[in-house]
Amino acid sequence: SEVLLAAVAQDWHALQHGTEEARALLDIVRVAMEQELAALDFAAPALLNDPERMLTLIECNPGAVRYTSEELLLDPAFVTTLLDNEIADDKFFADMVTRNWRVLELMPPRLTKDKDIVL
Image 1 (cartoon, helix red, strand yellow):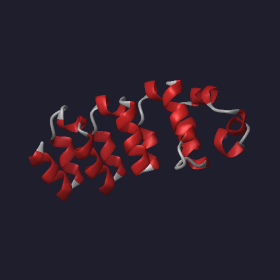
Image 2 (tube, one colour):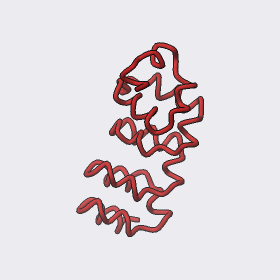
Image 3 (cartoon, helix red, strand yellow):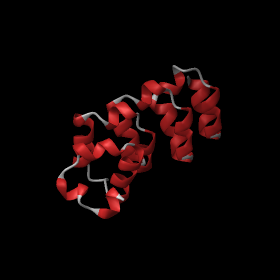
């Protein structure tokens, strides 16, 4: 993984050549994501479905919410954590809804009544 980390530090595209196990390592994926958010296309599903690691990535770049697994977006505890997070703004919540509209069921009324988020 040290070799992949060094390669990713040079060019985020190197992430796609890592093993599934290496593409699930937060340190490697975060280095790639800091260069280009689209690097998350190459992250392992295990990472994208892990609440703690995804929260870390979202805190680094709120756009990472677009890569959150469907399962996590429907997890009330994870959504509550996101709702309580200070990095979240209307665009962030709109991205969540765009990713999976059913997340609206987990949002408080103040958000579900906001046309910028719902539409």
